[in-house]
Image (cartoon, rainbow over all chains, first blue to last red; front, side, top):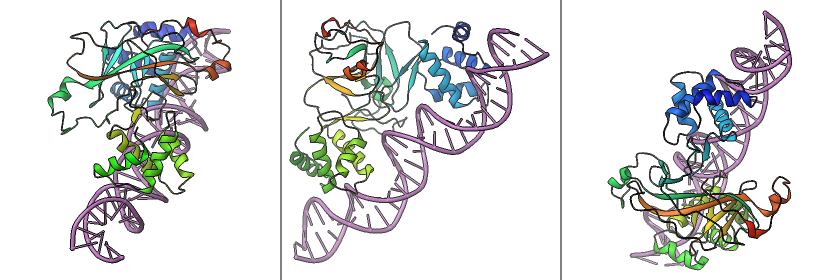
Length: 158
Length: 158
DNA sequence: TTGTTGAACGGTAATCATTGTTGCTATGAT
DNA sequence: ATCATAGCAACAATGATTACCGTTCAACAA
């Protein structure tokens, strides 16, 4: 993701208007190093501007996704996360208990479909999601989900 | 997924009751070779029993997921799909236009995280989702003309 | 066979994430 | 400064999923 000022330029260059709300969202995105949801961005922005609509956050995030500055990421937790890290190719590691997502920058073998395996599809991208327990959730007894801190439902493996 | 009679046995063995609604859902699942949603199963079951609650379908599907007989599958289309094929390890091919999901049984190199890359996670599974346009959607989109199946380009991370 | 018990049922209403509608406001170009 | 229009906030609505609640019925034992 580019810096806020560059994003403003990009928006203008694409016929979109640069509003105070959008600039605030740009800054909130730059400040978040992880994978924020629309709601968490909205909470962050609301601290600075108290009447920002959640819909405005959604629209700006979708605009940024269309422009390729961030990536929408759905790992099965029921809400869409947004990934500002689009410069560096990476995959994701998802905790099946609390739902937190971490980037995986470790080198992985290039994924290639064997000839004829694409079933006529025009395949454009491949994403790998690793699922497991994060260090924090491993501390609690794995056999007994005693007190889940977050009520994200577990997601079954493929 | 096991046969309906075996599923009934399994339910009884786990202290769950075998109702007519559940047996009907078992049969509907066995009859569907693809990746049904809760709603499509509900429509199928409703043809046979006209007063089956959608909640009952959800509960039975979750029970089957807990027992490992089917797998919940969320590929970012907004609804949860259920995959009766849990015996054979496979990945998924998702059409980004119409959302249909196909199994990929082609052999892929085993995905394995290098030592120290797991960031303290207890990694349990890895799933690959390939995204593209299915043959039907390619026909209606001149921007992505059909190409010979042999020259599928290698695909990188999303 | 019959009685008992609690899991499971159907119907409805609620919840959560997300999107549409509408009338007003402010951006960016003239 | 003016002005057309994209964008805004405040709702209301949507679609998938789940909770509530009074009733029913599968499982098991007498």
